[in-house]
Length: 307
Image 1: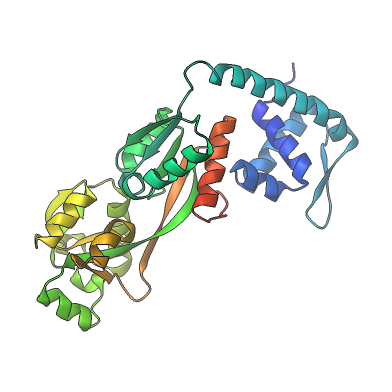
Image 2 (image 1 turned 90 degrees about the vertical axis):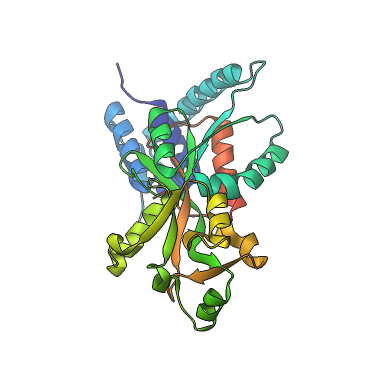
């Protein structure tokens, strides 16, 4: 009995149609090494070589590959038809999504509304939490696609950077901080101020902790007066003078433009991070899920490969 998977057939067909391992990896949200490993596994299972490689890094089907291609297409088509029969029941199966705080509050509302205009038949089930909680839901299979601000499990999950975010130090808009702004002070110079911090386990907190380690700033020198899991509450506390806070520039844009808060770049280079779409390694997606992931990349104007 031959042992090969539908995933291997899907990758085989995609490579055959695009004549490229690299382009197939991009189309399937996989790394090139993962694509190569699946093709090698399929060739081993069939005990034959399916592709010929040339010096230009393009690939063509061997004679055996040409014989396999139409059969593989039929198998995948039958599987899609079976999936469609299940998914097109009276009640549509929803997209199972998870989002940590920043993407959940400041990115997904517009993204999901835009995708609904393209696919009005789509339904969502959205779970919220910090980055650590969304990772746990992904590993458990409770959500299929997660939006997070930290790469916490690259061994088991794949991450697509969909948007670059900046972290900035925000302060109340008072004469004291206005003077510091005029003096060209950076956020790193304010790390010793009373601070309202995000909760441990959030992508923002992880990024700030890593930044402090790189700069050699001991965590013991932070004067944390509160840890809060909601950026909206943190912004209100900062505006009322409870303390400064490092937050996503996406989260504080309106308050800074409206003059309620001041924002300081962390240093001359700026503290940047990515917002990622995360999925489990070697996940096989339904067509709606694949379409949604492609839409995410185009919506945010990114074309990065899976890391």
